[in-house]
View 1 (cartoon, helix red, strand yellow):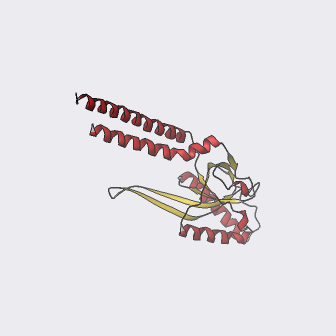
View 2 (cartoon, helix red, strand yellow):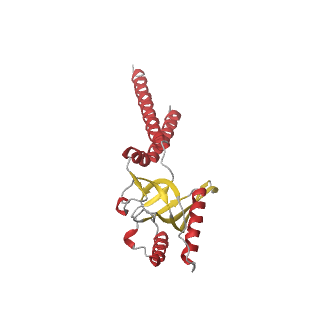
View 3 (cartoon, helix red, strand yellow):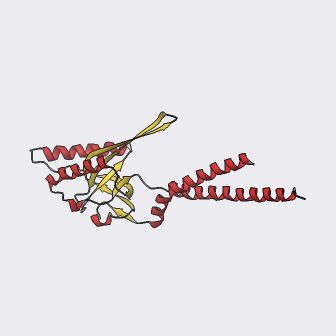
Length: 216
């Protein structure tokens, strides 16, 4: 009985963790609000889905390295790069975009290099023609003192090309499509948790009945 209780506890915790992990993205999908990169910067002040085509890239101005260990052994490493992006052609502001996807990082870095070369060139040449499609979600800025320092330095650098402080979105973009996988995790986790709860109640009731029967 005790072994069954431990198994149920572990499985229910797994279900709860899955539900919590999928909750935020599931709420975004159900809410359905989608902001485009060309929308006014005032639209980038709440959590929502976001998409569009980027034609301006600066960075990366910061990189976050995360290491996952199991029993002291490194099992994986993730590098998330932070860029400042916008759509100069049709947009009205700029936002931080973070991504840990190698293909997207390669596209953004190539675009940033093109813009750097154009901005530092003394030749009279057309602006870079760039279009990078993306999907993601609006989220809070990364909370870290060093990040704030690097972000402020990047914004100060971009004042040289006329981008003002009021043109930056308060939220950042986390690149990566929010899919129905989150919904499956959320409801699957809840179902798993409730199933374990029901089984635990049934076992408890049976144990109580068996205990009562032994008294006669």
